[in-house]
Length: 248
Image 1 (cartoon, rainbow, N blue to C red):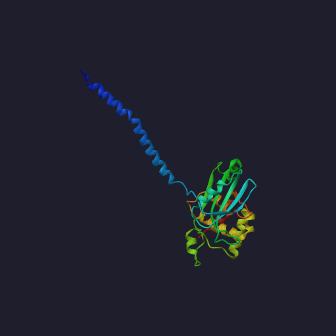
Image 2 (spheres, rainbow, N blue to C red):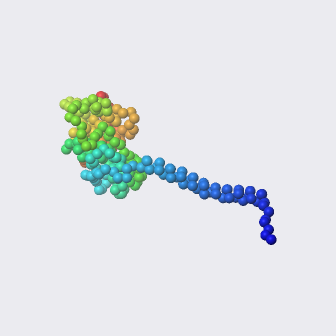
Image 3 (tube, helix red, strand yellow):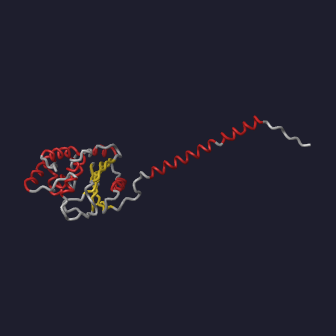
């Protein structure tokens, strides 16, 4: 004769509680995975384009504590991606000044400068750029286009809106060159480039939201074999303000 064991309600309730709480860790892990996956998806939106547009390094110093790298592109798309791609190829300890120009729209003496940047590699890079080791600094010239499709009609209104004065002539041109030469005599070796840089620097001077305008001046007035320091950039800004060149 078979014997059916008696039911124990208290034991059954305890067993159900153990089963219920025993599943809790797996449930918590599942929620954590979902939350982590969402966070990773959101982070992907912040990543720059994996592949920057094509670019060409047209000049790169291979010695010295402060080195210049000049790059040409055919578009204004993802200029920061181009900048990052260039920095990845730089490993020697130095401070790098990276200039990104449009392949069109410039002249023999004046670049169509799209962006400027700095990159500090090692202690020497930090010392020459004023950045921390491994840090970067990057700024885009918003008034430029690439390819250069600007029409021939007068752009004076647009330039004035951007805080850029007209190209000076005659006595005004000579006054500007003298003021620039007082800050750094080398920059007026290439007069057209100096004039162009001064006009574009006015866009930063006239924009109260732009920071580190002395550094921007140093970048704009660094070209060919001419290097301008941030201290000289400060003198250039004071000179431009002093003669009223940036008043538009």
